[in-house]
Image (cartoon, rainbow, N blue to C red):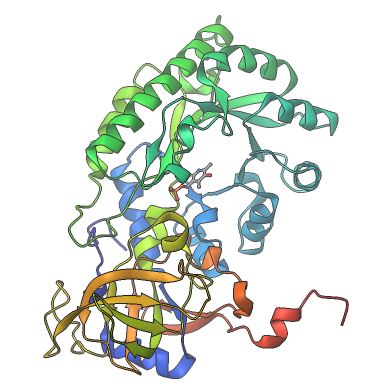
Length: 438
Ligand SMILES: *Cc1c(COP(=O)(O)O)cnc(C)c1O
């Protein structure tokens, strides 16, 4: 898969006949994940960021097939929980290549991680975001590879809830980092600095905030290199820091009128900002790699005319895909049944003789939050139609849950023209899986 894959993939670009076939065979709601697109997205960002190591932040989508495919493409995996390390290893990751970013890590997580480090992964890198974590690691006998997460005091991203860079929850305040680093270097093998400024950065304003935040990270790195690298030759090999990992957060255009991220421009300012730093650079995109590789297919069961916007009831809900309810996220929606097999045109009106009407598409849950869009112009839905909700690969199936006793949906994967079931559909018996008092 080459770097010249299209930078944007819209719902209109999917083969509508094939999608209808999948819905008929596997039922709805159904996640459809194109593993070739996952690989293409990874390779595009990896190529644009030449000279920068590109890991994959697994929490965006820890599906075993997704992680396995990215390992095949040469990606290393960044994990933000012990369970993610477990899943990465199950998908085939070499334990020593893994990186674990701890945020308020529960005791169980640290116990598991230190045991994993002792028994399987002596080269595991652990990133801490609080000095308490240093003490808690030391108390467990850990003295391995360690990175410090910097809180640059500036956040960026598509929503307040993901602009982590200015939230005190994440990382050591940038002005304190050199002192914490000096302490950490005495007790651990200090190898890097880390920063993750936010998620879904797309606008010029976001990138400007990202750049300003990273200037603070670069300052901290330079200061540490000056303090700890004193007496050493400069040069990456014996530098005080092996790497600076500037996190993920690279956005994708969810709306039809948004332009894709200019990766080359980002690469330029990354190189510029860290010009005076000896350590090599890493990034760890999650969303960018998986977002447009997946969609949700859902069937229309109810049409209810209403004053401003027709109510369109579907079988997917916020339990299937929670981003609109949780982050007010926009996801494109297309009436697959109304458009021709070639997908028609991009504006939602082409390839169909149906009228376009304002529609509010929502699921079966008893909360007003269970809507995917309100007053959206869609080719007139009819009962039994198949709708596609686009760009659901990141934080989509990953956040699927059983609220309202909704069994989790099935997922199929596409690769080289082959279809495989990645996840079987849950049934009602699964809802009672761990209940004991029956
Ligand atoms: C979530 C997360 C990422 C990935 O963020 P995206 O916005 O999905 O690219 C990277 N690093 C860390 C530490 C994270 O928590």
